[in-house]
View 1 (cartoon, helix red, strand yellow):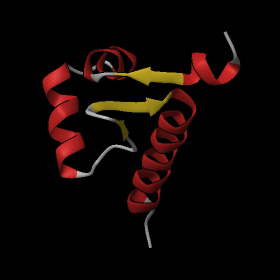
View 2: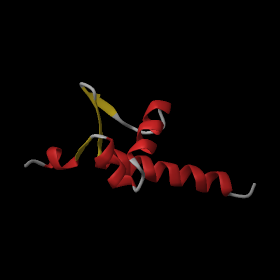
View 3: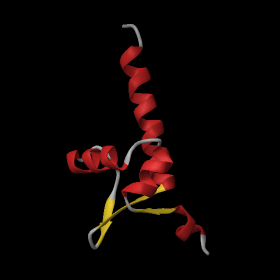
View 4: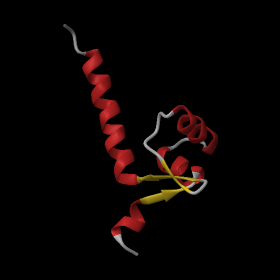
Length: 69
């Protein structure tokens, strides 16, 4: 197994397990365009590394909003 294969999450169930969400929540966020996902055929996929960067970006954006002016 290569690094790229271990980085890949295939299906809402695996993405949900990684993020601590339910598969339905992943499906909803995917439909809304809120998650950095892509499709292989009809299967929703995401890279762990991309999700981790996305989480870090979400945290940074939240911290920036909380900063006093």
